Image 1 (cartoon, rainbow, N blue to C red):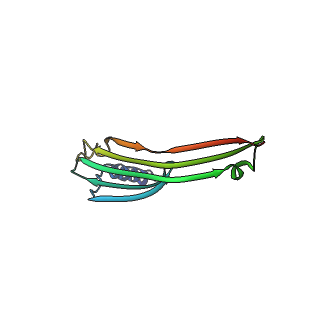
Image 2 (cartoon, rainbow, N blue to C red):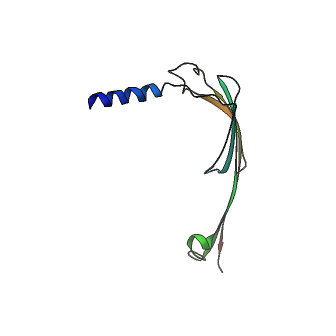
Image 3 (spheres, rainbow, N blue to C red):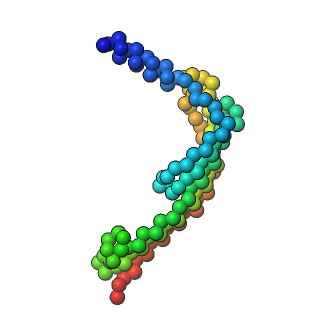
Length: 124
Protein backbone atom coordinates (compact mmCIF):
# COMPACT_ATOMS: atom_id res chain seq x y z
CA UNK A 1 0.00 0.00 0.00
CA UNK A 2 2.84 2.38 0.87
CA UNK A 3 4.45 1.77 -2.56
CA UNK A 4 1.20 2.61 -4.37
CA UNK A 5 0.87 5.91 -2.48
CA UNK A 6 4.52 6.73 -3.27
CA UNK A 7 4.02 6.02 -6.98
CA UNK A 8 0.86 8.16 -7.11
CA UNK A 9 2.65 11.02 -5.31
CA UNK A 10 5.56 10.88 -7.78
CA UNK A 11 3.19 10.85 -10.78
CA UNK A 12 1.32 13.92 -9.47
CA UNK A 13 4.66 15.64 -8.87
CA UNK A 14 5.83 14.94 -12.42
CA UNK A 15 2.51 16.11 -13.85
CA UNK A 16 2.99 19.51 -12.21
CA UNK A 17 6.25 20.03 -14.12
CA UNK A 18 4.70 19.76 -17.59
CA UNK A 19 4.52 22.90 -19.69
CA UNK A 20 1.12 23.90 -21.12
CA UNK A 21 0.47 23.56 -24.83
CA UNK A 22 0.55 26.83 -26.76
CA UNK A 23 -2.63 27.77 -28.55
CA UNK A 24 -2.81 30.33 -31.34
CA UNK A 25 -5.98 31.84 -29.94
CA UNK A 26 -8.32 31.06 -27.05
CA UNK A 27 -11.89 32.34 -26.68
CA UNK A 28 -14.00 32.03 -23.56
CA UNK A 29 -17.17 33.27 -21.92
CA UNK A 30 -18.30 33.47 -18.31
CA UNK A 31 -20.28 35.13 -15.58
CA UNK A 32 -18.69 36.99 -12.68
CA UNK A 33 -19.33 39.88 -10.31
CA UNK A 34 -18.52 42.16 -13.26
CA UNK A 35 -21.39 40.73 -15.33
CA UNK A 36 -21.33 38.55 -18.43
CA UNK A 37 -17.88 38.24 -19.93
CA UNK A 38 -16.08 37.47 -23.16
CA UNK A 39 -12.35 36.75 -23.11
CA UNK A 40 -9.89 36.39 -25.97
CA UNK A 41 -6.22 35.45 -25.55
CA UNK A 42 -3.39 34.81 -27.97
CA UNK A 43 0.25 33.82 -27.62
CA UNK A 44 2.67 36.20 -29.29
CA UNK A 45 5.82 34.16 -28.46
CA UNK A 46 6.77 31.41 -26.01
CA UNK A 47 7.15 34.12 -23.37
CA UNK A 48 4.42 36.70 -24.15
CA UNK A 49 0.63 36.40 -24.39
CA UNK A 50 -2.01 39.10 -24.85
CA UNK A 51 -5.53 38.97 -23.35
CA UNK A 52 -8.63 41.09 -24.00
CA UNK A 53 -11.54 40.99 -21.54
CA UNK A 54 -14.99 42.53 -21.87
CA UNK A 55 -17.66 42.31 -19.15
CA UNK A 56 -21.14 43.78 -19.45
CA UNK A 57 -24.67 43.50 -18.09
CA UNK A 58 -27.51 45.27 -16.29
CA UNK A 59 -29.45 44.64 -13.09
CA UNK A 60 -32.67 46.38 -12.07
CA UNK A 61 -33.95 45.37 -8.63
CA UNK A 62 -37.03 47.25 -7.53
CA UNK A 63 -37.56 47.37 -3.78
CA UNK A 64 -40.71 45.26 -3.99
CA UNK A 65 -38.57 42.24 -5.01
CA UNK A 66 -36.21 42.70 -2.07
CA UNK A 67 -38.27 43.59 0.97
CA UNK A 68 -41.86 44.12 -0.06
CA UNK A 69 -43.42 47.34 -1.27
CA UNK A 70 -41.58 49.38 1.33
CA UNK A 71 -39.57 49.01 4.48
CA UNK A 72 -39.99 51.46 7.33
CA UNK A 73 -41.99 53.82 5.14
CA UNK A 74 -39.24 53.99 2.45
CA UNK A 75 -39.42 52.61 -1.11
CA UNK A 76 -36.04 51.29 -2.36
CA UNK A 77 -34.73 50.80 -5.91
CA UNK A 78 -31.32 49.50 -7.07
CA UNK A 79 -30.04 49.75 -10.66
CA UNK A 80 -26.64 48.61 -11.91
CA UNK A 81 -25.00 48.76 -15.32
CA UNK A 82 -21.73 46.91 -15.95
CA UNK A 83 -19.13 47.68 -18.58
CA UNK A 84 -15.50 46.71 -17.93
CA UNK A 85 -12.92 46.27 -20.70
CA UNK A 86 -9.31 45.24 -20.30
CA UNK A 87 -6.13 44.60 -22.27
CA UNK A 88 -3.48 42.59 -20.42
CA UNK A 89 -0.02 41.33 -21.40
CA UNK A 90 1.29 38.19 -19.70
CA UNK A 91 5.03 37.61 -19.49
CA UNK A 92 6.17 34.05 -18.76
CA UNK A 93 9.86 34.55 -17.82
CA UNK A 94 10.50 30.84 -17.30
CA UNK A 95 8.12 29.40 -19.89
CA UNK A 96 10.60 26.84 -21.19
CA UNK A 97 11.78 25.75 -17.73
CA UNK A 98 10.02 22.72 -16.24
CA UNK A 99 10.32 24.22 -12.76
CA UNK A 100 9.03 27.76 -13.32
CA UNK A 101 6.51 27.22 -16.10
CA UNK A 102 3.68 28.53 -13.92
CA UNK A 103 5.35 31.87 -13.13
CA UNK A 104 3.48 34.72 -14.85
CA UNK A 105 4.00 38.48 -14.59
CA UNK A 106 1.01 40.45 -15.91
CA UNK A 107 0.34 44.11 -16.59
CA UNK A 108 -2.27 46.01 -18.50
CA UNK A 109 -5.07 48.53 -18.66
CA UNK A 110 -8.73 48.34 -17.66
CA UNK A 111 -11.55 50.72 -18.46
CA UNK A 112 -14.30 50.65 -15.85
CA UNK A 113 -17.72 51.94 -16.88
CA UNK A 114 -19.74 50.39 -14.05
CA UNK A 115 -22.63 52.52 -12.76
CA UNK A 116 -24.76 51.94 -9.67
CA UNK A 117 -27.90 53.86 -8.71
CA UNK A 118 -29.46 53.43 -5.30
CA UNK A 119 -32.64 55.37 -4.56
CA UNK A 120 -34.73 55.55 -1.43
CA UNK A 121 -38.02 57.44 -1.67
CA UNK A 122 -40.00 58.09 1.50
CA UNK A 123 -43.65 57.18 1.13
CA UNK A 124 -45.86 60.14 2.05
